[in-house]
Amino acid sequence: MAKEEKETYVLHDGNIGNTQIAADVVAVIAGLAAMEVEGVSSMAGNITRELIGKLGVKNLSKGVKAELKDDKVQVRLMLNLKYGYNVMDISGKVQERVKTMIESMTGLDVTEVDVRVAGVAIDKGGTL
Image 1 (cartoon, rainbow, N blue to C red):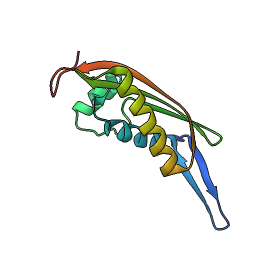
Image 2: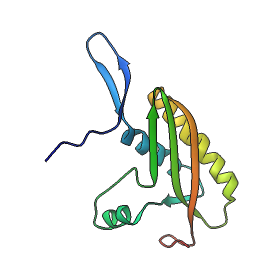
Image 3: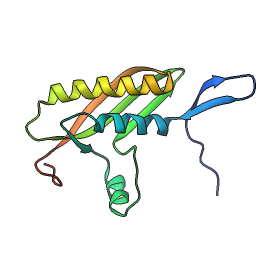
């Protein structure tokens, strides 16, 4: 079985070694940052990821795609919002929070944060 290579970016190439970050790590940072915004109910994902989640396997980057090119980051998020919150207001806050957290934790430049609202949570467990 071949080892799968993950997309990585070199953050620092020093005298005694280098520091690399995987795109999956940036996606986790983005997902956690988005969940900190009041009005976000949960991250949305595809069917496979939903099934994995129900089987007890934790995937902190669910609903997030991060692409690293040079020192630039593009992020796409799929969110479920809480009922009663303004979509544009919450989306803007998510974009700012995700950009701020990725840039402060990695030093990378976030050029794009796209938000897709996939559903609306009407209670603690359900979405429309």
